[in-house]
Length: 373
Image (cartoon, rainbow, N blue to C red; front, top):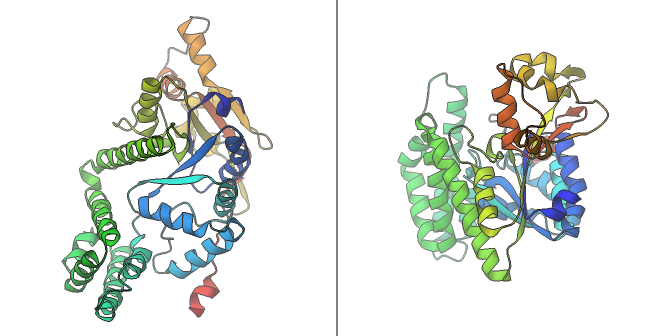
């Protein structure tokens, strides 16, 4: 409660597909609402966020709407959903809570790899009043087949395939994109964003991570400025992103969202709180795993903090307070190799959360429904 009372921005670095994380977000949303946090910022594409907002209305139907959506676009050959991190029941439940509390949703990321599996339907709907709709629909059906064939071929191949370049070279795909681009300004924008997303994916070996981060930063800035102008005051924003995007220092060679939002906070003379989260104990198909032992190479430098993790309780470590003690020479960090990891954590975040016994979210997909349709 104190964090949300004091902050303009809260950046939460999550473990993806975590049941306890989604349960936590559900519990936090009423607290956010009581402290004027009206925006939930997610690691999804711009148009994927639009689709989530559609599926969240009315809020009572959110879980069922997402289940129908996931079931419709799930392909067993691919084994993935078209909007990442929203394939689970617990994810749908926190979206339901967000909808009930009238929270806005911003999507900042590139459109996901498999989002095109539903975006072609979105594009077709933009052309429903076009005089050549039947021809465009025919192009669309052929485009879907081409896209699915290339995705399956890529999944089954041991060789690198530039799948998006192959898709874009196809004449039927070109015909569909050209036709719907002319039919609707929104369709044109979707195609532009989709091609930007595909370009980032295609260049992942060539440091396109930096381009992805810049894309997210630019989208946050645009949304933040538009909302501030529209409401005549700056929105309070909760950002739920993977851990790599959340620190307030440089991360994987980029000045990621956690850093960028802190820059805005300093300029506006408001507070941004950055939170990291770990899992200590995890239930995997009935087997309980202690990450400190199972992944000792990853966590041994953090043992000083990770030891506080409990199976039945949340652990919250105030890194902001520890940072202040370091500055004032009240404490000192170890002078062995642990120093580097611990100092990066303490400088990168204000709080470290350690989850209680966690497990994967429960799939919100009806495969029998998929077969029937």
